[in-house]
Image: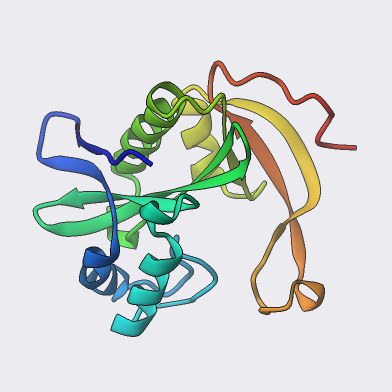
Length: 189
């Protein structure tokens, strides 16, 4: 997998591939996070061990899911996760520190990550899964040019339990990057 290091906007905000050496940035970035961040079901702040485990799970060298960090002045403000679903299909997920939300940072980062995934990595299907009541994320998807594709009942896992059979599942809506072909089979019923 190719790595990315790209400036966002006119300042010194950067979008770059994260790796194991960035575990300390994850610890600091999540220190004030009461909810779930990008790197899995873990709630709240990450310990050094949590961060190392997350970075190992999201290792770009492994060829699976990986993270692009949104970095400013040596601080990790958030991340965009790239999650291969099927050959030729990549889900993007994103997270920002609570204090950085509402500033347009996520829009810049998700748009740059989407374009890079589609154009540079050659992934034809780039998409977002969004909770139907997550108004800020729905507005972001529309603002950066994604198009609504489907409302899918009980599609997204809540991650309240390690065992998927004991977990709860919620509806989500799928938004796709411009140029992404329509699915061969309908996603909703």
